[in-house]
Image (tube, rainbow, N blue to C red; front, side, top):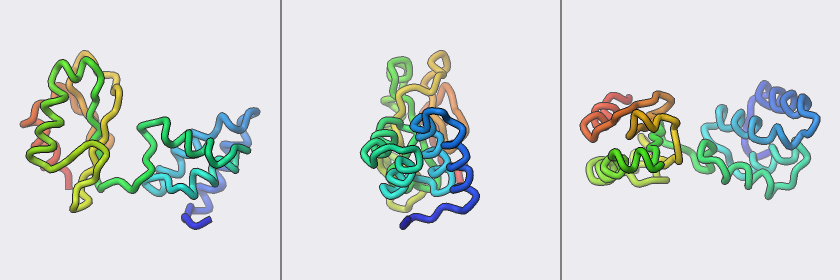
Length: 157
């Protein structure tokens, strides 16, 4: 394989696959394991994970492209996920996205030129009653205003 996974991760992936009577059901867990180690999922890793559970390479690709939590490109040091569902949109998510574009130069699906931030749009973070919301790295933020957003981003190393 042209990507490097630690022996511990390879062993964990094999163990996950072995626990499932229908091995293909383990694909997403294995892909998340790969992403946890590498930060993203290279095409070769899609193929490897698919083979591990008895699927064709295209099915590994389908698993990665179907879910917004899986990344096919290396992310910036900080991943910002902005919810774009109806509740967040009605309560200011578009303003947050405009602010990210205008002040920070960030566009959905892209990484900043300095490699500091990756901006992702996600369908729902499950905080509709506290919208608009976002996740910066793994920390959830609710009732976010553009000023809050500046403080959040400035507080990231």
